[in-house]
Structure formats: structure tokens, C-alpha cells
Image (tube, rainbow, N blue to C red; front, side, top):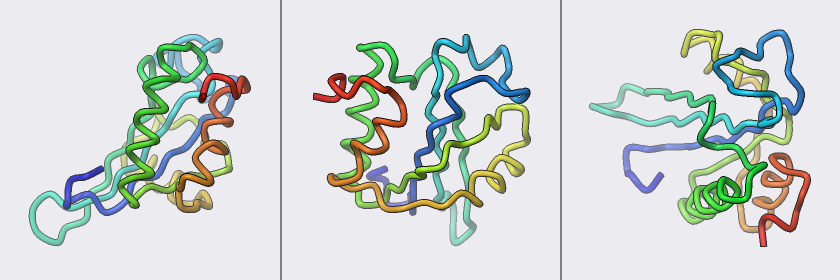
Length: 133
């Protein structure tokens, strides 16, 4: 997020129940919701590049050690000033092409991730607010 080539990073929380698009590759349903991330930036020149991350087993907040990692990532995101989040739960996108996933996620309404809103996003990932202290 601190890389000058990164223009924007948007955080999403997946649905908290499996849908028909929930794949075995996502892990087990007990791990829901997952973190999905859409990063926008430039690699070489002015060409815009999108990177979609649909977490499987690394960014989920319902285990204490993972909650700490989520807190670190979102704290860094707030400091970057480039981060946004959606209050709308994101559909699962692992079954889509990267281009289709970008299109789906880009349609969700977002707002700036700030020190005032970061706990709202974190609460979407885990119903136990004590995890974030």
C-alpha cells in the first residue's frame, strides 16, 4: 500500500454464509467471512492494473492469531490514505476470471477506510468486537 504505484486498495468482507459460488478452495464455511481485496495501480507507465485477492486460508478474522494479522493490515491501510472498504458484503469471486471479479467488486459502493471507519469494516469480519482491542 505504501508503494507509489499503488493508487487504491479496497477491502471487502465476503458473505458470511456459503452460497452456490462458495468453492471448496475457499476452505470450510466455519472460516467465513473472508477478506477480499481489490488493488489498483500501475506497473509500467500509465497502464492501470487491477489485482484481485479472494482470501482462502490466510486472511480470515475468526481466529485470534488471524485477527491480529487483519488488524495490522487494516491499520497500515488506514495510514496509507489509499484504502477504501465496502459495507456491502462481497460475493465470492474465486470462480470468476480476474477481469470478471474486478467488474463485480467495482460495482459495490465503497468509502474511505479511516481511523473512524476501520472498526466498522473489522466488525464485518468477526462478530466478536473484543478481538480488535
